[in-house]
Image (cartoon, rainbow, N blue to C red; front, side, top):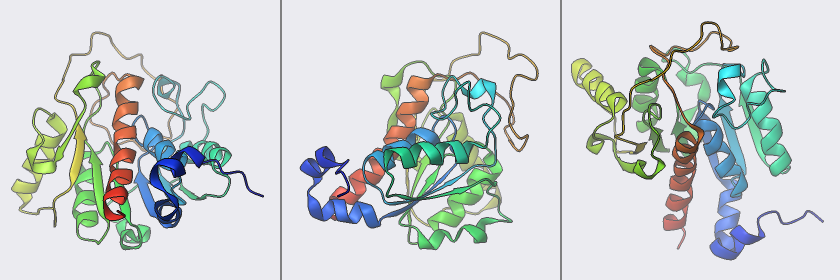
Length: 248
């Protein structure tokens, strides 16, 4: 008989909602400092079908904030390491690991319309904008992470509808891009953000990262695990809260 790993979750949510969680399909784009914690929050809560998408490998500089990044996993594909951990937590889960990058050219291959929830934890402005536009045009519920770097105060993390996000440079850049190109999200969606923006006090050593080189970040900024993890857990919490509201 399979152990009930989710007895405490079931106590709160009840059998009907737990059954719904087991049937829910979620796709997470980007499993770095934010997305990796989101994935764990979902699986630990009983989500039964999860797709994780990221092209990079674990780098030395990831160890400070990414769930699956340890001294022993440096150099391995992030999605493969994370999938192993998630299946160790929930052996019965259906977890698909895709070591690839999302782009406007590849979006159709992900079949976004087949998911109940789409989680955007992408760093690249261009790819993030594309995912928001594509996902918002599907029946799936979209939740998006704004910038989680350059912050030290975890109590400032908050949630708002995209057009109401204030104080976040990434959110401002996305709005500017949408207005300039006159292309807009098809529906409203919630974002996790934090208006705190601090300067980098140090200098990043050259060649410290062991990633696959697929990152399209314009700049590299300092980050802290307590902040990025709260971003990720908040994203997973938004999924659970939405399911809770839909299943009284």
